[in-house]
Length: 249
Ligand SMILES: NC(=O)c1ccc[n+]([C@@H]2O[C@H](COP(=O)([O-])OP(=O)(O)OC[C@H]3O[C@@H](n4cnc5c(N)ncnc54)[C@H](OP(=O)(O)O)[C@@H]3O)[C@@H](O)[C@H]2O)c1
Image 1 (spheres, protein in one colour):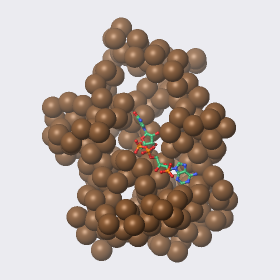
Image 2: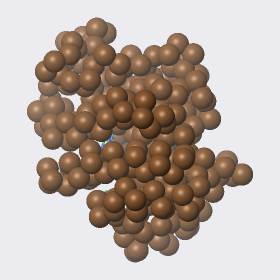
Image 3: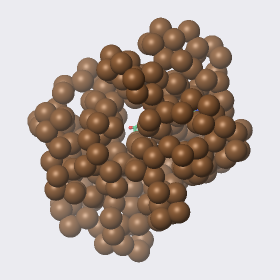
Image 4: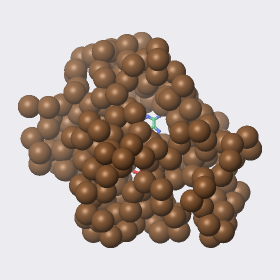
């Protein structure tokens, strides 16, 4: 039986992911911040662990990961548009601590939820498939939540550029804006246009597919609402080695 450990385990994507992994006979451990969330997580079949990412050192996080010895670690945490300080402490520094802790604990497989259009907009060319509508979405996103985008960029850049040292088998899933619709089972993945939102349940299914598809290791890809069955969309990204972050950090 496989074991997964989810940082941000009480989050909305993570809850869908928990349900799906439990249904696939995974043991799921969820890192959460609030004891009050324990019953809800247990009801989903998870084994919650109360530990704040912000308040934990790399050594603390390494000890937790070692203790539960998961086959895969998933990052689906986020400060959720809190203060700039919390955004940096969770979305950037918290993520980097977890990259280091995962590597130190000897776990290889790592899936992180990032976001579409996370890139170095100042120094690198815009994606060549962007049309004016994409540029408009990008301008709005970076104008509204630039601190969050910078924190995500710093984390993803660290994950990719420091991987010679950490040697994680990572996949970076980059969803568009998230909605709470029921999962449709279909998405558009890879080099996509930015306008369409995606349901959190579909993002969770994309993560499950990535965990089970080693061809996605080392890739970062965008995913938004669309018409391609999720397993097919993820398989295509993996087989064509589509990476939407490469060359843009
Ligand atoms: N919102 C969007 O449109 C959008 C778009 C693209 C990507 N994303 C990314 O997608 C991911 C999942 O999104 P979501 O909607 O599921 O987010 P969410 O519901 O806000 O979940 C994030 C979780 O992170 C937890 N967290 C925050 N700080 C923590 C800490 N110090 N220690 C432990 N846990 C902590 C939160 O715990 P509490 O419950 O205790 O607050 C929350 O449960 C996030 O990484 C987000 O940045 C979001």
